[in-house]
Length: 489
Image (tube, rainbow, N blue to C red):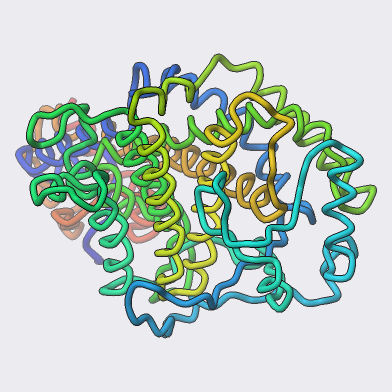
Protein backbone atom coordinates (compact mmCIF):
# COMPACT_ATOMS: atom_id res chain seq x y z
CA UNK A 1 0.00 0.00 0.00
CA UNK A 2 1.42 3.38 -1.02
CA UNK A 3 1.63 5.98 1.81
CA UNK A 4 0.13 9.40 1.56
CA UNK A 5 -3.50 8.69 0.59
CA UNK A 6 -6.30 9.98 2.75
CA UNK A 7 -9.97 10.81 3.13
CA UNK A 8 -11.20 13.09 5.88
CA UNK A 9 -12.83 10.24 7.81
CA UNK A 10 -9.70 8.07 7.72
CA UNK A 11 -7.43 11.05 8.37
CA UNK A 12 -8.93 11.58 11.80
CA UNK A 13 -7.84 8.09 12.74
CA UNK A 14 -4.28 8.41 11.56
CA UNK A 15 -2.89 11.95 12.00
CA UNK A 16 -1.73 13.15 15.37
CA UNK A 17 -3.70 16.04 16.83
CA UNK A 18 -0.66 18.29 17.30
CA UNK A 19 0.52 17.89 13.70
CA UNK A 20 -2.96 18.57 12.32
CA UNK A 21 -3.36 21.63 14.54
CA UNK A 22 -0.07 23.09 13.35
CA UNK A 23 -0.99 22.48 9.72
CA UNK A 24 -4.38 24.06 10.29
CA UNK A 25 -2.88 27.17 11.89
CA UNK A 26 -0.46 27.59 8.98
CA UNK A 27 -3.26 27.13 6.45
CA UNK A 28 -5.42 29.69 8.23
CA UNK A 29 -2.59 32.24 8.02
CA UNK A 30 -2.20 31.60 4.29
CA UNK A 31 -5.95 31.72 3.77
CA UNK A 32 -6.09 35.10 5.47
CA UNK A 33 -3.23 36.37 3.31
CA UNK A 34 -5.12 35.30 0.18
CA UNK A 35 -8.32 37.05 1.33
CA UNK A 36 -7.47 40.75 1.68
CA UNK A 37 -10.37 42.95 2.71
CA UNK A 38 -11.23 46.59 3.22
CA UNK A 39 -9.93 49.55 1.21
CA UNK A 40 -6.83 48.99 -0.92
CA UNK A 41 -3.99 51.18 0.34
CA UNK A 42 -3.25 54.15 -1.96
CA UNK A 43 -6.42 53.42 -3.95
CA UNK A 44 -10.07 54.51 -3.83
CA UNK A 45 -11.85 51.16 -3.72
CA UNK A 46 -12.12 47.91 -1.78
CA UNK A 47 -10.70 44.51 -2.59
CA UNK A 48 -14.16 42.97 -2.96
CA UNK A 49 -15.11 45.64 -5.51
CA UNK A 50 -12.07 44.81 -7.63
CA UNK A 51 -12.87 41.10 -7.52
CA UNK A 52 -16.43 41.78 -8.64
CA UNK A 53 -15.28 44.04 -11.48
CA UNK A 54 -12.63 41.57 -12.57
CA UNK A 55 -15.08 38.68 -12.65
CA UNK A 56 -17.18 40.73 -15.07
CA UNK A 57 -14.30 41.97 -17.24
CA UNK A 58 -12.14 38.84 -17.44
CA UNK A 59 -14.37 36.91 -19.91
CA UNK A 60 -14.17 39.85 -22.34
CA UNK A 61 -10.39 40.11 -21.93
CA UNK A 62 -9.87 36.38 -22.44
CA UNK A 63 -11.62 36.59 -25.80
CA UNK A 64 -10.13 39.94 -26.81
CA UNK A 65 -6.52 38.75 -26.59
CA UNK A 66 -7.41 35.93 -29.00
CA UNK A 67 -8.30 38.35 -31.81
CA UNK A 68 -5.82 39.00 -34.62
CA UNK A 69 -5.13 42.59 -33.55
CA UNK A 70 -4.12 41.62 -30.00
CA UNK A 71 -2.53 38.20 -30.40
CA UNK A 72 0.26 39.28 -32.76
CA UNK A 73 3.10 41.51 -31.63
CA UNK A 74 6.63 42.43 -32.62
CA UNK A 75 9.14 42.67 -29.77
CA UNK A 76 12.90 42.76 -30.18
CA UNK A 77 14.10 39.84 -28.08
CA UNK A 78 17.74 40.23 -29.15
CA UNK A 79 18.43 43.79 -28.04
CA UNK A 80 21.07 42.59 -25.59
CA UNK A 81 21.66 43.24 -21.90
CA UNK A 82 23.20 46.62 -21.08
CA UNK A 83 23.97 45.80 -17.44
CA UNK A 84 26.00 42.58 -17.44
CA UNK A 85 27.09 39.80 -19.76
CA UNK A 86 24.07 37.59 -20.46
CA UNK A 87 24.34 34.95 -23.18
CA UNK A 88 20.56 34.33 -23.33
CA UNK A 89 21.30 30.61 -23.47
CA UNK A 90 18.58 28.57 -21.78
CA UNK A 91 18.73 24.79 -21.86
CA UNK A 92 15.06 24.38 -20.97
CA UNK A 93 12.88 23.33 -23.89
CA UNK A 94 10.07 25.63 -22.73
CA UNK A 95 12.26 28.75 -22.98
CA UNK A 96 12.15 29.17 -26.76
CA UNK A 97 9.70 31.43 -28.61
CA UNK A 98 8.00 30.20 -31.76
CA UNK A 99 7.71 32.99 -34.36
CA UNK A 100 4.51 33.31 -36.35
CA UNK A 101 4.42 31.99 -39.90
CA UNK A 102 4.19 34.67 -42.60
CA UNK A 103 1.02 33.23 -44.07
CA UNK A 104 -0.87 33.46 -40.76
CA UNK A 105 -0.25 37.19 -40.29
CA UNK A 106 -3.29 39.29 -41.23
CA UNK A 107 -2.77 41.47 -44.30
CA UNK A 108 -3.37 44.60 -42.24
CA UNK A 109 -0.34 43.84 -40.05
CA UNK A 110 2.15 42.95 -42.75
CA UNK A 111 5.11 45.28 -43.25
CA UNK A 112 4.00 46.73 -46.57
CA UNK A 113 0.76 48.10 -45.08
CA UNK A 114 1.73 48.78 -41.48
CA UNK A 115 2.44 52.52 -41.81
CA UNK A 116 -0.77 53.00 -43.79
CA UNK A 117 -2.72 51.30 -41.05
CA UNK A 118 -1.29 53.56 -38.37
CA UNK A 119 -2.10 56.78 -40.20
CA UNK A 120 -5.57 55.63 -41.23
CA UNK A 121 -6.37 54.92 -37.60
CA UNK A 122 -5.41 58.47 -36.72
CA UNK A 123 -7.53 59.87 -39.49
CA UNK A 124 -10.62 57.67 -39.21
CA UNK A 125 -11.04 57.32 -35.51
CA UNK A 126 -9.18 60.20 -33.94
CA UNK A 127 -7.05 57.66 -32.06
CA UNK A 128 -3.51 58.88 -32.72
CA UNK A 129 -1.28 55.91 -33.35
CA UNK A 130 2.11 56.90 -34.63
CA UNK A 131 5.49 55.44 -35.55
CA UNK A 132 8.17 56.42 -33.07
CA UNK A 133 11.43 57.84 -34.39
CA UNK A 134 13.48 57.32 -31.24
CA UNK A 135 13.56 54.95 -28.28
CA UNK A 136 11.43 57.23 -26.15
CA UNK A 137 10.26 60.78 -25.76
CA UNK A 138 9.36 62.77 -22.67
CA UNK A 139 5.94 61.08 -22.40
CA UNK A 140 7.25 57.49 -22.33
CA UNK A 141 7.72 55.48 -19.16
CA UNK A 142 9.56 52.61 -20.84
CA UNK A 143 11.92 52.02 -23.75
CA UNK A 144 9.96 51.05 -26.86
CA UNK A 145 11.57 49.17 -29.74
CA UNK A 146 12.34 51.48 -32.65
CA UNK A 147 10.26 50.93 -35.84
CA UNK A 148 13.30 50.46 -38.10
CA UNK A 149 14.53 47.67 -35.79
CA UNK A 150 11.15 45.96 -35.78
CA UNK A 151 11.08 45.79 -39.58
CA UNK A 152 13.36 42.75 -39.39
CA UNK A 153 11.72 41.25 -36.28
CA UNK A 154 9.15 38.48 -36.87
CA UNK A 155 5.68 38.66 -35.39
CA UNK A 156 4.97 36.42 -32.40
CA UNK A 157 1.60 34.76 -31.90
CA UNK A 158 1.10 35.14 -28.15
CA UNK A 159 -1.47 32.33 -28.06
CA UNK A 160 1.16 29.88 -29.30
CA UNK A 161 3.70 31.12 -26.76
CA UNK A 162 1.71 31.24 -23.50
CA UNK A 163 3.20 32.55 -20.28
CA UNK A 164 3.77 29.65 -17.91
CA UNK A 165 6.44 27.64 -16.09
CA UNK A 166 9.56 27.17 -18.24
CA UNK A 167 12.07 25.91 -15.68
CA UNK A 168 14.01 29.18 -15.86
CA UNK A 169 15.52 29.86 -12.43
CA UNK A 170 18.85 30.11 -10.64
CA UNK A 171 21.46 32.87 -10.79
CA UNK A 172 20.23 34.48 -14.01
CA UNK A 173 16.66 34.97 -12.79
CA UNK A 174 17.83 36.08 -9.34
CA UNK A 175 20.17 38.63 -10.89
CA UNK A 176 17.34 40.20 -12.92
CA UNK A 177 15.00 40.67 -9.97
CA UNK A 178 17.92 41.66 -7.76
CA UNK A 179 18.79 44.45 -10.19
CA UNK A 180 15.18 45.63 -10.25
CA UNK A 181 14.80 45.56 -6.46
CA UNK A 182 18.20 46.87 -5.40
CA UNK A 183 19.43 49.20 -8.15
CA UNK A 184 16.40 51.44 -8.56
CA UNK A 185 16.57 53.70 -5.53
CA UNK A 186 15.07 57.18 -5.43
CA UNK A 187 17.12 60.17 -4.32
CA UNK A 188 19.33 61.12 -7.26
CA UNK A 189 23.04 60.55 -7.68
CA UNK A 190 24.01 62.22 -4.43
CA UNK A 191 22.03 60.11 -2.00
CA UNK A 192 23.76 58.82 1.11
CA UNK A 193 24.52 55.26 2.06
CA UNK A 194 21.54 55.21 4.43
CA UNK A 195 19.29 56.47 1.63
CA UNK A 196 20.66 53.79 -0.67
CA UNK A 197 19.74 51.22 1.94
CA UNK A 198 16.12 52.36 1.72
CA UNK A 199 15.82 51.07 -1.84
CA UNK A 200 13.13 49.13 -3.61
CA UNK A 201 14.22 45.82 -2.13
CA UNK A 202 14.04 47.05 1.47
CA UNK A 203 10.64 48.66 1.02
CA UNK A 204 9.25 45.59 -0.69
CA UNK A 205 10.57 43.33 2.03
CA UNK A 206 9.06 45.55 4.73
CA UNK A 207 5.58 45.39 3.22
CA UNK A 208 5.56 48.89 1.66
CA UNK A 209 4.61 50.73 4.82
CA UNK A 210 4.11 54.48 4.77
CA UNK A 211 7.41 54.88 6.62
CA UNK A 212 10.82 53.51 5.69
CA UNK A 213 12.99 51.51 8.07
CA UNK A 214 14.36 54.76 9.57
CA UNK A 215 10.83 55.87 10.45
CA UNK A 216 10.71 58.57 7.77
CA UNK A 217 7.57 59.10 5.70
CA UNK A 218 7.64 57.47 2.25
CA UNK A 219 5.90 59.73 -0.27
CA UNK A 220 3.04 58.32 -2.27
CA UNK A 221 4.90 58.51 -5.59
CA UNK A 222 7.70 56.24 -4.34
CA UNK A 223 5.23 53.93 -2.65
CA UNK A 224 3.20 53.60 -5.85
CA UNK A 225 6.33 52.78 -7.83
CA UNK A 226 7.41 50.10 -5.40
CA UNK A 227 3.95 48.55 -5.20
CA UNK A 228 3.54 48.41 -8.97
CA UNK A 229 6.79 46.48 -9.40
CA UNK A 230 5.98 44.14 -6.52
CA UNK A 231 2.48 43.57 -7.92
CA UNK A 232 3.85 42.79 -11.37
CA UNK A 233 6.35 40.32 -9.89
CA UNK A 234 3.58 38.68 -7.85
CA UNK A 235 1.40 38.37 -10.94
CA UNK A 236 4.19 36.71 -12.92
CA UNK A 237 4.78 34.28 -10.03
CA UNK A 238 1.06 33.48 -9.98
CA UNK A 239 1.11 32.65 -13.71
CA UNK A 240 4.00 30.24 -13.13
CA UNK A 241 2.21 28.44 -10.29
CA UNK A 242 -1.09 28.37 -12.18
CA UNK A 243 0.54 26.81 -15.25
CA UNK A 244 3.18 24.56 -13.71
CA UNK A 245 4.88 21.64 -15.44
CA UNK A 246 5.47 18.33 -13.69
CA UNK A 247 8.82 17.59 -15.29
CA UNK A 248 8.56 13.88 -14.44
CA UNK A 249 5.17 13.27 -16.05
CA UNK A 250 5.12 16.10 -18.58
CA UNK A 251 1.68 17.19 -17.39
CA UNK A 252 0.60 20.76 -16.65
CA UNK A 253 -1.18 21.45 -13.38
CA UNK A 254 -2.06 24.19 -10.92
CA UNK A 255 0.67 23.98 -8.27
CA UNK A 256 -0.86 24.91 -4.94
CA UNK A 257 2.36 24.40 -2.97
CA UNK A 258 4.15 26.78 -5.37
CA UNK A 259 1.44 29.38 -4.78
CA UNK A 260 1.62 28.99 -1.00
CA UNK A 261 5.39 29.44 -1.00
CA UNK A 262 5.64 32.31 -3.50
CA UNK A 263 2.53 34.28 -2.55
CA UNK A 264 0.40 32.73 0.19
CA UNK A 265 2.99 33.37 2.88
CA UNK A 266 3.44 36.99 1.75
CA UNK A 267 0.21 39.02 2.13
CA UNK A 268 1.87 42.21 0.85
CA UNK A 269 2.60 40.58 -2.51
CA UNK A 270 -1.04 39.71 -3.07
CA UNK A 271 -2.16 43.17 -1.90
CA UNK A 272 0.29 44.81 -4.30
CA UNK A 273 -1.00 42.67 -7.15
CA UNK A 274 -4.51 44.02 -6.53
CA UNK A 275 -3.07 47.53 -6.45
CA UNK A 276 -1.34 47.05 -9.80
CA UNK A 277 -4.66 45.87 -11.22
CA UNK A 278 -6.32 49.03 -9.87
CA UNK A 279 -3.82 51.28 -11.71
CA UNK A 280 -4.25 49.37 -14.98
CA UNK A 281 -8.03 49.53 -14.60
CA UNK A 282 -7.86 53.29 -14.12
CA UNK A 283 -5.78 53.64 -17.31
CA UNK A 284 -8.32 51.56 -19.26
CA UNK A 285 -11.12 53.76 -17.90
CA UNK A 286 -9.31 56.93 -18.97
CA UNK A 287 -8.71 55.54 -22.45
CA UNK A 288 -12.13 53.89 -22.75
CA UNK A 289 -13.88 56.39 -25.08
CA UNK A 290 -11.16 55.81 -27.68
CA UNK A 291 -11.03 52.06 -27.18
CA UNK A 292 -14.71 51.83 -28.00
CA UNK A 293 -14.71 54.25 -30.96
CA UNK A 294 -11.52 53.10 -32.70
CA UNK A 295 -11.61 51.45 -36.14
CA UNK A 296 -9.44 48.36 -35.61
CA UNK A 297 -7.18 47.21 -38.42
CA UNK A 298 -8.48 43.67 -38.73
CA UNK A 299 -10.77 41.68 -40.99
CA UNK A 300 -14.36 42.88 -40.93
CA UNK A 301 -15.43 39.81 -38.96
CA UNK A 302 -12.65 40.24 -36.40
CA UNK A 303 -13.31 43.96 -36.20
CA UNK A 304 -16.93 43.39 -35.22
CA UNK A 305 -15.80 40.93 -32.56
CA UNK A 306 -13.26 43.40 -31.15
CA UNK A 307 -15.82 46.20 -31.06
CA UNK A 308 -18.30 44.00 -29.18
CA UNK A 309 -15.70 42.87 -26.63
CA UNK A 310 -14.35 46.41 -26.18
CA UNK A 311 -17.86 47.65 -25.54
CA UNK A 312 -18.25 45.10 -22.74
CA UNK A 313 -14.92 46.12 -21.18
CA UNK A 314 -15.62 49.84 -21.46
CA UNK A 315 -19.14 49.62 -20.05
CA UNK A 316 -18.00 47.48 -17.12
CA UNK A 317 -15.02 49.75 -16.43
CA UNK A 318 -17.09 52.93 -16.46
CA UNK A 319 -19.86 51.40 -14.32
CA UNK A 320 -17.54 50.69 -11.39
CA UNK A 321 -16.68 53.35 -8.79
CA UNK A 322 -13.38 55.27 -9.02
CA UNK A 323 -10.39 53.03 -8.36
CA UNK A 324 -7.34 55.30 -8.35
CA UNK A 325 -6.80 59.08 -8.26
CA UNK A 326 -3.67 59.96 -10.22
CA UNK A 327 -4.25 63.69 -9.71
CA UNK A 328 -2.87 63.52 -6.15
CA UNK A 329 0.57 62.50 -7.42
CA UNK A 330 3.40 64.77 -8.57
CA UNK A 331 1.81 67.92 -7.12
CA UNK A 332 4.33 69.38 -4.65
CA UNK A 333 7.43 71.50 -5.18
CA UNK A 334 9.57 68.50 -6.16
CA UNK A 335 6.98 67.17 -8.64
CA UNK A 336 9.00 67.75 -11.81
CA UNK A 337 12.21 66.13 -10.57
CA UNK A 338 10.36 63.28 -8.86
CA UNK A 339 8.34 62.53 -11.99
CA UNK A 340 11.50 62.50 -14.09
CA UNK A 341 13.15 60.13 -11.63
CA UNK A 342 10.04 57.93 -11.60
CA UNK A 343 10.18 57.68 -15.40
CA UNK A 344 13.90 57.00 -15.49
CA UNK A 345 13.59 54.17 -12.99
CA UNK A 346 10.77 52.56 -14.94
CA UNK A 347 12.67 52.94 -18.22
CA UNK A 348 15.63 51.31 -16.51
CA UNK A 349 13.44 48.36 -15.52
CA UNK A 350 12.20 48.01 -19.09
CA UNK A 351 15.85 47.70 -20.17
CA UNK A 352 16.65 45.19 -17.41
CA UNK A 353 14.02 42.90 -18.99
CA UNK A 354 16.45 42.47 -21.91
CA UNK A 355 18.71 40.63 -19.46
CA UNK A 356 16.25 37.79 -18.82
CA UNK A 357 17.96 34.57 -19.94
CA UNK A 358 14.82 32.67 -20.92
CA UNK A 359 13.46 33.86 -24.29
CA UNK A 360 9.79 33.23 -23.49
CA UNK A 361 10.16 34.85 -20.06
CA UNK A 362 11.85 37.79 -21.77
CA UNK A 363 8.94 38.09 -24.21
CA UNK A 364 6.29 38.20 -21.48
CA UNK A 365 8.41 40.27 -19.13
CA UNK A 366 8.98 42.96 -21.77
CA UNK A 367 5.35 42.87 -22.86
CA UNK A 368 3.97 43.28 -19.33
CA UNK A 369 6.45 46.00 -18.37
CA UNK A 370 5.54 47.82 -21.59
CA UNK A 371 1.84 47.41 -20.75
CA UNK A 372 2.33 48.86 -17.28
CA UNK A 373 4.51 51.65 -18.68
CA UNK A 374 1.75 52.46 -21.18
CA UNK A 375 -0.77 52.70 -18.34
CA UNK A 376 1.52 55.16 -16.52
CA UNK A 377 1.92 57.15 -19.73
CA UNK A 378 -1.87 57.42 -20.08
CA UNK A 379 -2.28 58.51 -16.46
CA UNK A 380 0.61 60.95 -16.12
CA UNK A 381 1.78 62.21 -19.51
CA UNK A 382 -1.24 63.92 -21.04
CA UNK A 383 -3.29 65.27 -18.16
CA UNK A 384 -6.98 65.23 -18.97
CA UNK A 385 -6.52 66.36 -22.57
CA UNK A 386 -7.32 63.17 -24.44
CA UNK A 387 -6.62 64.80 -27.79
CA UNK A 388 -2.91 64.62 -26.95
CA UNK A 389 -2.83 60.84 -26.48
CA UNK A 390 -0.07 59.25 -28.56
CA UNK A 391 0.19 55.46 -28.52
CA UNK A 392 1.83 52.98 -30.87
CA UNK A 393 0.15 49.69 -31.73
CA UNK A 394 2.81 47.88 -29.67
CA UNK A 395 1.85 49.90 -26.59
CA UNK A 396 -1.86 49.22 -27.02
CA UNK A 397 -1.36 45.48 -27.56
CA UNK A 398 0.94 45.38 -24.52
CA UNK A 399 -1.58 47.32 -22.39
CA UNK A 400 -4.48 44.97 -23.16
CA UNK A 401 -2.41 41.79 -22.83
CA UNK A 402 -0.81 43.06 -19.61
CA UNK A 403 -4.22 43.86 -18.19
CA UNK A 404 -5.46 40.42 -19.24
CA UNK A 405 -2.51 38.75 -17.52
CA UNK A 406 -3.06 40.42 -14.16
CA UNK A 407 -6.81 39.83 -14.50
CA UNK A 408 -6.01 36.14 -14.91
CA UNK A 409 -3.78 36.32 -11.82
CA UNK A 410 -6.62 37.63 -9.66
CA UNK A 411 -8.86 34.80 -10.88
CA UNK A 412 -6.07 32.34 -10.07
CA UNK A 413 -5.84 33.75 -6.53
CA UNK A 414 -9.54 33.00 -6.10
CA UNK A 415 -9.07 29.43 -7.36
CA UNK A 416 -6.09 28.78 -5.10
CA UNK A 417 -7.94 30.37 -2.18
CA UNK A 418 -10.85 27.93 -2.66
CA UNK A 419 -8.46 24.96 -2.61
CA UNK A 420 -6.78 26.23 0.55
CA UNK A 421 -10.18 26.51 2.22
CA UNK A 422 -10.96 22.92 1.22
CA UNK A 423 -7.79 21.88 3.01
CA UNK A 424 -8.81 23.92 6.03
CA UNK A 425 -12.15 22.12 6.25
CA UNK A 426 -10.47 18.70 6.18
CA UNK A 427 -8.02 19.63 8.92
CA UNK A 428 -10.80 21.19 10.99
CA UNK A 429 -12.55 17.81 10.93
CA UNK A 430 -9.32 16.13 12.00
CA UNK A 431 -8.63 18.48 14.91
CA UNK A 432 -12.20 18.32 16.22
CA UNK A 433 -12.72 14.53 15.90
CA UNK A 434 -13.31 12.89 19.36
CA UNK A 435 -10.99 9.90 18.87
CA UNK A 436 -7.82 11.17 17.28
CA UNK A 437 -5.70 8.36 18.70
CA UNK A 438 -7.70 5.62 16.95
CA UNK A 439 -5.78 3.52 14.46
CA UNK A 440 -7.26 2.00 11.37
CA UNK A 441 -5.39 -1.21 12.20
CA UNK A 442 -7.34 -1.44 15.50
CA UNK A 443 -10.74 -1.60 13.76
CA UNK A 444 -11.98 -5.24 14.02
CA UNK A 445 -11.85 -7.20 10.78
CA UNK A 446 -9.54 -4.88 8.84
CA UNK A 447 -6.18 -5.28 10.53
CA UNK A 448 -4.56 -5.63 7.11
CA UNK A 449 -5.31 -1.98 6.25
CA UNK A 450 -2.64 0.56 7.21
CA UNK A 451 -2.21 4.02 5.74
CA UNK A 452 0.73 6.19 6.74
CA UNK A 453 -0.47 9.75 6.33
CA UNK A 454 2.26 11.66 8.11
CA UNK A 455 3.45 13.31 4.90
CA UNK A 456 0.06 14.05 3.40
CA UNK A 457 -0.35 17.61 2.08
CA UNK A 458 -4.09 17.40 1.33
CA UNK A 459 -3.62 19.20 -2.00
CA UNK A 460 -6.28 17.18 -3.84
CA UNK A 461 -8.75 15.75 -1.30
CA UNK A 462 -11.26 14.56 -3.90
CA UNK A 463 -8.60 12.78 -5.94
CA UNK A 464 -7.16 11.30 -2.75
CA UNK A 465 -10.56 9.90 -1.87
CA UNK A 466 -10.88 8.35 -5.32
CA UNK A 467 -7.37 6.84 -5.25
CA UNK A 468 -7.85 5.41 -1.75
CA UNK A 469 -11.09 3.78 -2.77
CA UNK A 470 -9.41 2.22 -5.80
CA UNK A 471 -6.53 0.86 -3.69
CA UNK A 472 -8.70 -0.64 -0.97
CA UNK A 473 -11.54 -1.78 -3.16
CA UNK A 474 -15.10 -0.58 -2.74
CA UNK A 475 -16.18 -3.09 -0.09
CA UNK A 476 -13.16 -2.72 2.18
CA UNK A 477 -13.16 1.06 1.77
CA UNK A 478 -16.80 1.36 2.84
CA UNK A 479 -16.13 -1.03 5.73
CA UNK A 480 -13.26 1.12 7.00
CA UNK A 481 -15.36 4.26 6.83
CA UNK A 482 -18.38 2.63 8.47
CA UNK A 483 -16.33 1.13 11.29
CA UNK A 484 -14.53 4.43 11.85
CA UNK A 485 -17.75 6.39 12.00
CA UNK A 486 -19.10 3.93 14.55
CA UNK A 487 -16.00 4.29 16.72
CA UNK A 488 -15.97 8.09 16.81
CA UNK A 489 -19.72 8.68 17.02
